[in-house]
Length: 515
Image (cartoon, rainbow, N blue to C red; front, side, top):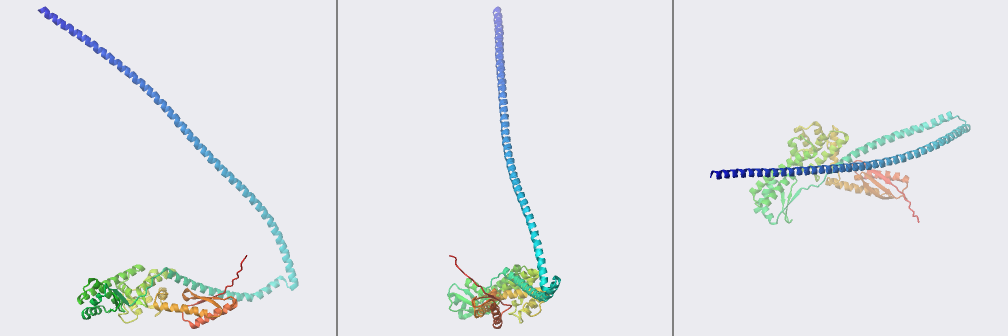
């Protein structure tokens, strides 16, 4: 039994040893195979890397060659372009040199011609000098006087004529200087007028209020006329309700009252409640609105003209001028225009522009209260300017703008001129427009009555008349007499400001036809 066990154990040991040996050999074979395959892979990788490196190297070399070839081509192109530009420049320079050579040849030829001409001229001068000497000798022989004696005789003979000519020249120079001064003054005034173009709208003494229907007239009149009486009493305006369809006329010489009545009536018509209590309330509101408008208009006028620092009460009085008219001309617009004209004239003559505008704006300030207080608008304006601490120059300009007193400064004279320009401009005032139209017609009628006159035209606002005569009836000498006769008749029969220039024109034309 023991032997069997020992045999079994030995068998097991032998089997285990054999198994270990076989296993070890197997592992060694597997390991050797793996090492062999790894080495083979490593060799493949190295070969591939070598091949890749060589390929990359070849590609890099090819790329470098391509870049160098491309750079060389570009360089060749640039060199070719520069060569062509150099060639063009050389051709241009060559052409310029050829032109210069030609010009030099021409200059040399001209110099040669000039030299020949100078020689000819010198010869001619010598001939002229010789002939002059012969002429002088012949004259001395004929006259029996030497050249010095002849010069003295001529000087004595001409001296008196020269004195007369000098006197005439002085007289003409003085007349020309006066004409130039008048022309310059006219240019300044005309420039100021052109740069200050203002609209002129004739103001009226009535206002018309439109009604939504004729039934509203009865409501405005009220029971037994109490509404219309209340409205007329509160505003001082006459309401004219006639057959005019859907309209009521407000009549009053005081434009402020008329404006209050217009605003109040329009508010009552819109509200619909028309009775004495409501009328009184509405009229009070309308008065406040008009006062606000007056203040705003005064401020707007000062801003428009560019005058600052005027007393607030004077500003309000300026606003009242919006509702004041003179011969149909709005006084506020007239004052603004005078201020602008004063500024333009002051700029032309070198005076203080702001001070001139201030004087022009305030020159008619007295018209804001002349309907409420006694005295002329000039006296009232001077009192207002003194009351509100205006400068003495402004006060004198206000006092002298109609020539009632002497102007103490150039600005006062400018205010006079600007006021005349604004008021006397055609269309500014009704009365002036009629006078202007009649003067133009009368001027053309007078000049057209003379024999030999073909046409006559009054121009320059009636300050000049051009008379076209018939050349067959009036000659050049008779033109002088005709101009004098026309001037005398104008002076005898017409009344006009300033001067009227008479131009007589005679024109002869000869016409023929080439066939």
